[in-house]
Length: 238
Image (cartoon, rainbow, N blue to C red; front, side, top):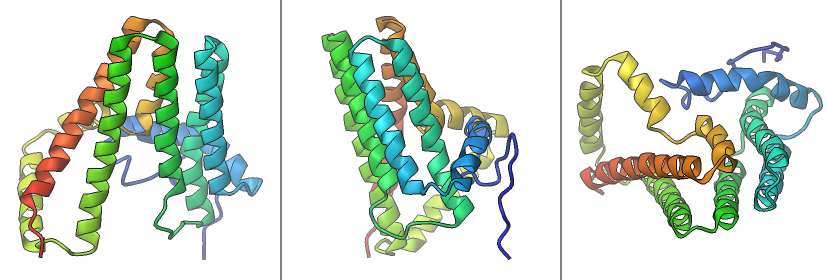
């Protein structure tokens, strides 16, 4: 019998369990946004509708960033982040998990970040900001492409699984040498995920903070792309 979701002020039962592994900050955020997800679930709002509203909120936020209305920008960006956490939660509550190859939520996430960083470039109109914006979007697309490529080859068994398992064992062995605290700190500070989204709200503070945020995101994405590239280079097709 399927368990009926209940209202809690804080609940992490329906969060993305694979994403929150070694990431207590992301798990905490999922738990905080649970009440909003529950209300949307009760009103029978579909996960795709939540995704679309999140995308539209991000577009409105980007527009107000260009217009230098930082208060309205923060309101709509916070709404976009909130809904971004709720679409997956509602999908898991209702059991509506899409089997389509095109993931609308992921597709919208990429466009949200593209328009937001584009608005940031227009807002500051500085050459270095534009360079960091272009670098961020390039690395984000690289990361997404390599990640999808790796997942595709593994799921379709188009690689030598013996070699892959050997690499996994080596990776696990190296991870076991690391302390749990280091794993958590690395995942929180050196991965780009939902917990990173609130940092975009700092883009309106001043140009120095914007430099820091964009350089930080470029750095962690560059490291992630490098690690994914190494994983793919070590694999052998069959």
